[in-house]
Figure 1 (cartoon, one colour):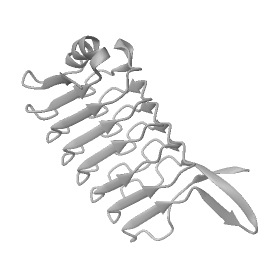
Figure 2 (cartoon, rainbow, N blue to C red; figure 1 turned 60 degrees about the vertical axis):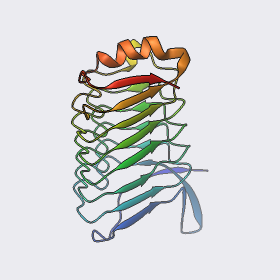
Figure 3 (cartoon, rainbow, N blue to C red; figure 1 turned 90 degrees about the vertical axis):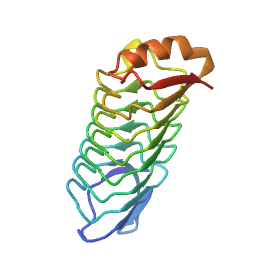
Length: 195
């Protein structure tokens, strides 16, 4: 089946966006595998995004500056959350990074001020620099992946999160993750515990 990128909705006032896994145009069905770079950049109307299965890449700056975006559903088919893709989405409060995702790009969720809780899925191999920088209310982080290495954690990836945050990591990676996470700019009050 041929593939396409999802560019953007033509209606700039729509509040709820559904990115389909497939689209049909003139009798031909296409698999939607990517949300294009800057597809919804600075759209102030969007409040909810549901990304359906088949989408593998959330492009660079795709939802950058969508200040009213409160809810995002990322499917298991997603593999890459691009650089600055949700930068400055100030209303976003909870996030589950699906188990299919292998990379969270640089600045992907930077300055998402209302973000309080995130779960990072089992296959993540890279958390880019500044990925969650400045998420000052981020208090609960669960990392399921055991595939991260010292180089996987980008500089300042978690700098500026809540000083009262708790990060839960897999038991078998506790010692390494604790050391590597502290090097990402965590405040002294942040607790790292094993699951």
